[in-house]
Length: 464
Image (cartoon, rainbow, N blue to C red):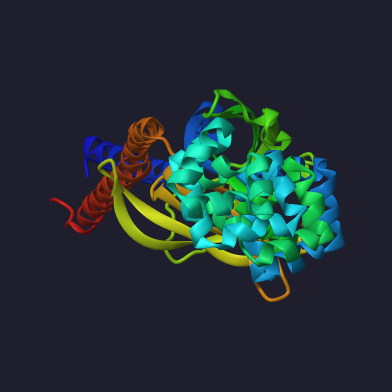
């Protein structure tokens, strides 16, 4: 074999070895470490939706009213409302008119004055404009009596005269509900109840008790009213530095109350602006708990790893629960044209480490349906919906919401993330798969060719 042929074989073999080695080392070692560049982990996401909170403005108003607070503390409120006669009267919208009209309240002090109102004849006569006019102007009475002796006799009845003298007739006749209320036989018994008397003496307390929310609280102190607040959450994560396999990220979160554009922290300090240092193992995107501040430490996955595996459950950090819960593959779909895996965290009655409801002492439990849409090559999330609820749980299993959310990534955030992750996916496919695979195939082919030529030359008979 000539020296030139030998050189060609050796060069071909060396190139093959280099390409094969490059493909293996690049794919297995070098490329796997590309995410050491912190900028690759920067994320800006807006989540839109609602927070559901206990309506503290209403509960504070209840606590500030000594009459209602005493009623709730005594436990008599539930008994009061359990009496259909009393609860029905309290729910009558005309009760407020009764309490606000001194003339009508005066009638209640003398049952004999109320007696004529039970007589349809009296009511019909009192509804006659001519009679009311004569009552207002006594000079018209002689003519009225002469024209209608029966009316004259009616007007001389002491009970009717007292009723007319009260000045309440016009108000009663103008309000049929009030007339029905004041002639209700149960009214006397209700007014004899000291609790009802206390409520009637405190118009604000009565208004509160007439509110269905208060009635639910009086019947069941755990049934606190809630209010839905529309919000937008702006979350920024910036990768500050890398230390080998460990990445340090700063996460800042601001939550805006869309009712008035204010910071949600003004309504509830739990949702004020926050800044947290996160420490993540870049190889599998799990939190490095021991390197984080214990007050804000997290566990489980920050994100899912590269080449996400459908058959693996990934413990993922759930902020509302303060713990990681398993995210499992549910189905494959498309998000803005990008193929994604839908991973779901679906849990109920999750213990919150013995935490109890401050208002009732009942244990708090957590439930969630969180769906994350993951691009499988990068393991990056491009969309998510979150429905979390923390409830006070009664011994019978009943639950009373204390805080909840219903959130989703904004359309703009999803569009930006899809564009970004689609580009990163292409990098992974080309530089993480095709480049090392192509280099390895070409290298192996060249090596095999060199070996084949070398063997063929070695076995060729010597010339001459």
